[in-house]
Each structure stands twice: as structure tokens, then as C-alpha cells.
Image (cartoon, rainbow, N blue to C red; front, side, top):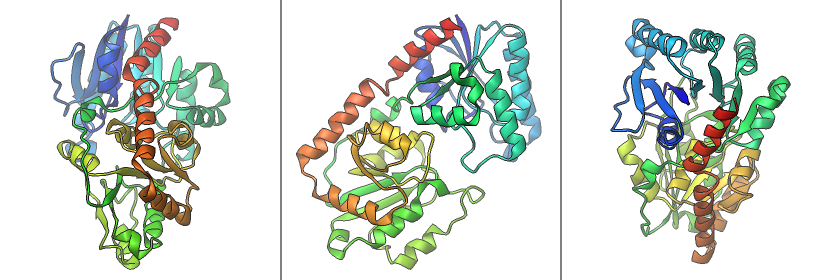
Length: 364
């Protein structure tokens, strides 16, 4: 079976690459991706032709990549086209529609059911039409499946759950290091739904004796068009500068292990989420988590076995969870890490996902 995988976001997001490495054991795979990706020697073909930096590089560069996408999707000898991401859906979807008319099956991974910042009516109708057209749609958890079916009930038989895998390339750098203080880390792109305001409020409620035992690091790129909140001003207003660090910039891949290895627990005070790559990154480094009790995190922490859950958007509850983590013994933390290991080897496994996906392709 011949499969074309389409993903615009390599190298900044490696989901498609990690999946492709295992999927190539089952199918003849071609990965069509971003021209800024420099592939190593892989067991599958890579076509790095898509332009993701449209604003910086201009529309002409994007259109060259779009032409190659049309040529591969419509004229290429593939049985299945699996779309991971779009850059400009209204321009790219017609290529897949033409490919489908030529007998190719369309599979789509709905990493986000709708954009986190919401969709206008026109965009929502485009997505509904796209979901109806696909032959199969993958989501990462049952909560996302329920949200998707609430958005478009007619596609029930086409929606399948396939959990997000952990990041093996980063896991290879995982180390257990002793720290003088307990270090809490919130990592990933800064956006309003991630509850940084709740975290800063919770930090302001910590008693002085606890502040001397811990530090909090918030690290990730803040793009003003997605989140223009003045977190620096909020941090200073609460007087947290002595134990809270804010780094609102993109962290280079080579520095990611330093942040996770330098932490004891990862924080996820999110207000809502379909799925979190940052949570899987924390699992890759075997870090216990403190997460809000939203449906996705209840599911992906196995009911809190990989850490502690707290009432979402409740700063007092998050403060209590951090204090409780400070009091945990090594046996309790080891049990959390063991639960993470079990999930990584079974549920959040690329090998399991690849076998599941190959079977799905065959069923189409």
C-alpha cells in the first residue's frame, strides 16, 4: 500500500516524523513536508517542498509548494493521502478533493477540532465540509471525538481515536538530576487557554516558607497576535520575581532537554484543550505533572495517576496541588513515573499507533 503523508510543520513539530518512522514498517510511505526540514537517512521518501513562512517569504514561495502538493496528491501513485496539517486550508483542500475523485482515500488527523482562538462562520463551514468529505478522521482522545461529533454528528462512523505518541528523539536525552529546590515547569507556546494567569495567581498565594523550597519556570514563544497578555507585568505586580522565571520566546530544540531535565514536575493549568503535545513531551522525560481536571487531562493522565489534578481555573486549588507535590515522598513520585512509563510503552506508543493506522488504511 502506498501512502502520502502531508505535514507543513516539520521541523518545529515532529509528530509526523516520529509516526512515519514506525508507519514505514507497514506501508510504502512518502512524507511531503516543509522545505525547511532537513531529513536524516530515513526508511521512507521525503519531499521537503512546502512553504510554511508565507508572511516572511511571500506568496510566490507558498504557491510553488502548493503546485508540488497538487502534483503529488492528484497525479502521484498513492492509495491513501493522510493529511496531518494545513497552512491555508481553502487553497489546499481542493487538491485533496481532486485526488479523492481519482480514487485515493483521504485520512485526516484532527489535532485541533477547531482553532484554539475560535473559527468564524465561513471557516467553520469549510471545516464541516472537509470532515464530511474525509474517508477517516483521527483524534487523540475520546474527549476530542465527542467534541468533533458535537460539531458534525454525521461523521460518527468515520472518527477513530489514536493517541499521540511521546517524543523519542527528546526522550534519548532524558536524565534524572537532583535539584536544590523543587522546580516546576510550564513549557510550550504561550496562549490564553493555557492558564498562565491562573498559575501566576496561584504562585502569589504560596506561603513564604514554600517559596524558599521551589522555583517556577514558564518558557515558550509568545506571539502577540495569539496572546497579547502582559504576563511580565502580572508577574511583577504579584511580586513573584524571586522564584518565578518567565521566558516568552521560542526555545531551540537543542535546549529543550535542559529545561525538562532541570525540572521535577510539569504544570498544565489549561482552561481547555483538545490534546497537548507538551504533556507528551513531559512524559518523554518521565516527569510527573500537575494538570487541570479538564476531560482531556483526566483521560491522558489515567485519572491522575501520572501526577496531581486540580479544579481548572482555580488558583487556590493549583496552589494546594503544588504544596502537596512538595510533600510527596520518593515512593509516591516513583509510582507516578512508573505510571508514565506504562502509558508511554502501551497507550502513547508510535509502534502501536502505526499498526492501528496501517490496519485502518487497509480497511478503507
